[in-house]
Image (cartoon, rainbow, N blue to C red; front, top):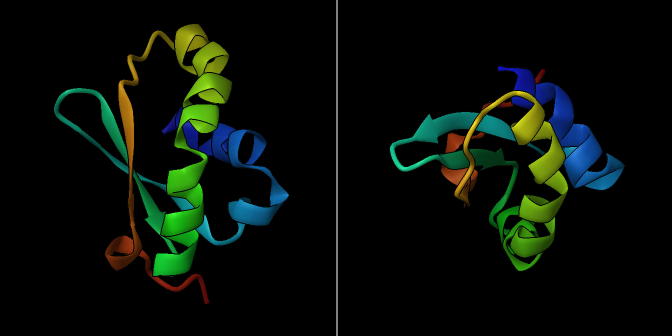
Length: 79
């Protein structure tokens, strides 16, 4: 989805390589696939910040985003 394009802007370089939007759940919850539990943990601590940064993007796309869920089990290796 379009939100994937924005993920690197929202999450920053550091996380753009080891996490990415995976799916949307009912209730406007976005699942972020994370390379490792440590990445998921670090993003979890930044969740409020990430949601705030996402706001202008989701509003421009007319998407509702209520929450973020970080899951290291959803990660598939890029290579």
